[in-house]
Length: 636
Image (cartoon, rainbow, N blue to C red; front, side):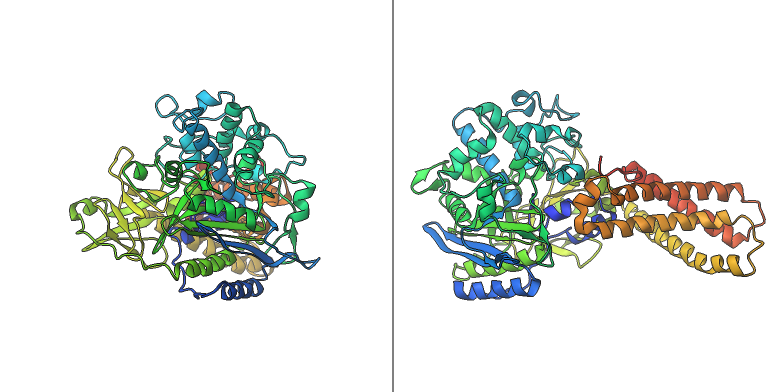
């Protein structure tokens, strides 16, 4: 389904969220969007096509659909590569691709249209519009979930569970049946309308409200009010014979293994199949600020509202960059608007420059995000090459007193998956420092990034065209900053060092436990340790260490098909559950045995090492249990 914000947890990554190693790695690698490498700049569409073909060939990616669009119409629509490798069938401009979360914008467009007609408001509460839809919000009396929160992902809900991703209903179910499948994932973890956290169930809940207001199936409403007027003649939410006849096959990164069609449980979140021709018309609609073919489908003010966030702390203080109504900004030398999306084996990027009147869409039939990034970098370079250079932005004096009040360590507090917070709160730690002309923010890896002021509280990277970091004035939840959609809260200066130290100590004790075992186990079997008693004191920390290492290894191995392996009851998911339980049992049992045998004839160094290892691993087990990791039934 989604790839919310550039490099902010892609759909493929989301479906692997909950995987221990992946969570840690993703948190570190996506703390900031990566700086794009200096691109090749194609001068013509022929050169651009050649460069894209090179990327596809080098990465074993079968094919791509591309459209470059101006206000006046398409500049270039192309199919490149193969839609079906086995049949040697080429991609054409009419080939359908699965556009994933790019689909979400049609929910927001529909809400805006109904609001324009006086039938619905973004400020309506979900409870008043859909009282039969189950969700939990502890703050409902004072801070109810509103339609705007569903579309701007500020409900505070977890993203949908692995079992929701894994469920592949055929025949496809109704929207209400999809929403009823696992309502417990719709639980607010903080006050709605404060922090952004991408939740795939939000737009489908808004789509259900649309069904109630219009009396139509949501997909029929979109067909009538959007696909037809926009000339998106082949676009469809459904898996029909006609769609299958036009649809590209989707592939794993090897470019050969076909991925079956995914009947997404809640279709409004990401089910649209569309061609490059369809999407070209859709991009042109945005460039003409709500009109297509000379017909106004929405007023320009509605499109402008779509592009601007309103319901986070930073947005309420005036930050205009972020996630609006299924439309977000990508800030570089210019500010792009749009949305991306992904399903297993398919990725899409849609972006446009409203002031310059140009945009693009690229769709690939592979789940390789690096490939999509390379292609979109080429396209961005091509479409901006002939545009006037952006104006040099002034850098006002830094408000030193304001910045000084925000210096310190910060932990992320708006995880997409709540269980991931066990890792994200450590791996995602950031240190803010004051600079003479701004501030710097750095994570665990890589150099800190410098920011210059735009206002007293908004800051941008020197090469960026708009602010992407906000110092939040509202201190009701502590000292907060927001950067690239993630909310951070300041923590005590000593806490990161305790956490880093604990992580290092845990790793060291685990390694030494296993290392010692490689020495004493052979000696016990064949040498002079045969008569030594109380080896259980030595063994429990080793077994606990191996169990935790097994969890990490299993999740890495499962990641290539995480949805099916962990979203269903399989040896992989049961093994993950069992290994986490075994880790906790061995750690606690090791601590109990070490304490019980503390006065027995055990070498003191051996005892102290076993005791320390079991104690530290027990603390880790309690910590992981607090976050719901121990005994996690990923299929439930």
